[in-house]
Length: 285
Image 1 (cartoon, rainbow, N blue to C red):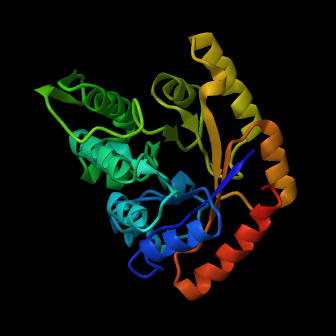
Image 2: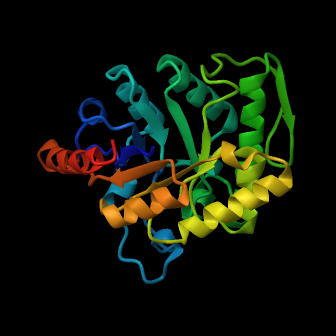
């Protein structure tokens, strides 16, 4: 059984997060995912996705709402819809505040939050947050490990190279125990796969960039070698084309979740597309 979700850049020019959430749940989708960028430096020195051949960066990248606020509002008007960050730029957020944001959304939605995370590709954006591109992976690792301490313990502390805090109290705790699923997005080479196995619960790349079946197999093998249950991981994909041959191949490879992309546009543009995606997904019900 595969679950279907949708993702969209929630911007000030697009359908509101609340209206999109209501319409997404009404059509039977499992989940709604919002990406984020804090801002986009106008220098534009880093090409989109680090691809020198990429077209100019679309405007929605610098118009996004704060994803935790948007997902909280989406949660307030839905009952069963899961709410995911797709993805949170962990290296650009303070880990103590981020732990509280994650726990708050999860607690206030009765355990419907999915924490999608990533390393980040925009070098100038990272630099504005005081993080070098070369350090971002280890910064993400430490921030996730530190947040796990805050979620799991009444008195939490963490001592690392990039994150340090002495014994502290923080509530609320997440409703999901020990915490919401942590799903890493992005390209998965050996270093990334090692991070997924160390501190994540799943892997969710963008469609069309990798041989996903091969990566699922490799990750499961590495997990088993590391002593983690390979069947405990969730596998999903962002931006999957709504084509039966593609979805069928993903299901055969062992995927759990398929997430379609919606344009960051007004309701008159988005809702007909949502209808078509829902109709496509019905064949897998």
